[in-house]
Image (tube, rainbow, N blue to C red; front, side, top):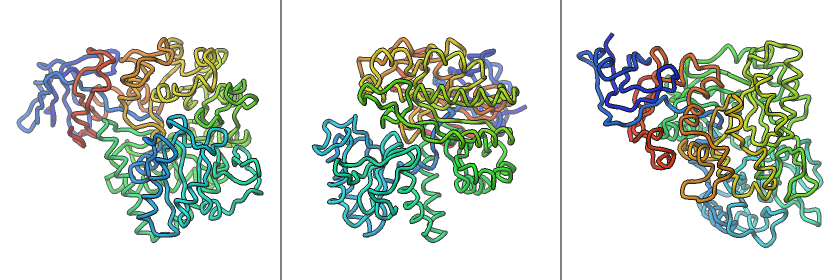
Length: 545
């Protein structure tokens, strides 16, 4: 059979353990036709075959982003981005510039700030977090939301609070709180579930736009995300908080033939909404492009906001163990619905207490339905794990989608939060998990971290940022090959798709990435300088670097 495309003179890393290395690959239509030596693949050359000699560049399966947020990723490129701010004053200046080009009364949205990365805190900080007095001064006539880099905290100005119908006397919801000044006034900091009133007011304003304007905005947002994914060699995206509304939008794009990236949707809705729509929506989708994979819930928050749920108190907040995000009844109801619809379950758990309690929930479900041990339920993040809980992953058949980039980023503050001994024993123990045979897949949680897989790969292996001297407990690093497997075949396994993607094998989908050099052969220090030369999705070139 003649190939449409042949990539030859390459270092092909297949991620297929039965045939790990090759010289060339042939593609016919949207499938891989053959993988082998240059001579073997040359036999598939026909009169219409396009042949590309890669001069030793590395060919691999396209990256699978194993845990991130698709529309929020696109939004990151279109909104106020505070990731590089070195102080609260820098952010205020960004807001001031945004106010100058925004009509009065319109919402301003930004994200990415992190107080641990500033060179100084504002003088009026409370619990190490800024307050909104200066924000009110620079934005008196626009409601402003600024989401923390972790995604688990907001700081908002007074107009946003008013729009949300909240004041200092409004009771805190279960699983969240509003930070207050000593005199009881609101600081503008809303944590975890307390954010929902603010977001609801913001979403209500957005929903009141004309239908065509909403569609145009959604298209721009998704297109920005797709452009970034293709340029980073990513073909599949595990979307971790898909709403039904977003799924409807993705389905329309897939039916039009321009979704652009393969989406596994992890539906995040309340149990009541799931009961109303889940059965009908599960029957919808687009083969190999869009499907509902799992239901998503949260057990806790994040280290950056001191809301990850811990077995012992934080070193930097004595007496505080974090908080529960979802109540147990919601989690149990969602587990029951996932079981009924034969979907995976995915629960966010950062802290060691959260990890233990998610495993407890899964164990209880498996006791009732033993077949769930093969359901590949997921414990998202698994950032801190008590040693006693590590064997339970394999015992229960639970997968651990981790984020390599979190290691380097959290290293800035995590020892202050948890102490050196607890970090060494429990934090991001990738090597220990790998050696125990726990199924690790990788991702970035973008836009929490940059979508760049090379930053995440480097952090997974070297446990630090490029250029840094100190590593965060380097003994827990993976090899380059293991890290790549976590981003390809392991990530496909975590989405129950290893039969069609994740490795370069005949018959699998032709989702392929070509890199500037072979990081496996040349070593981890070359990862940061690696560039994407080509990205193929469904056999088509969607990016050329």
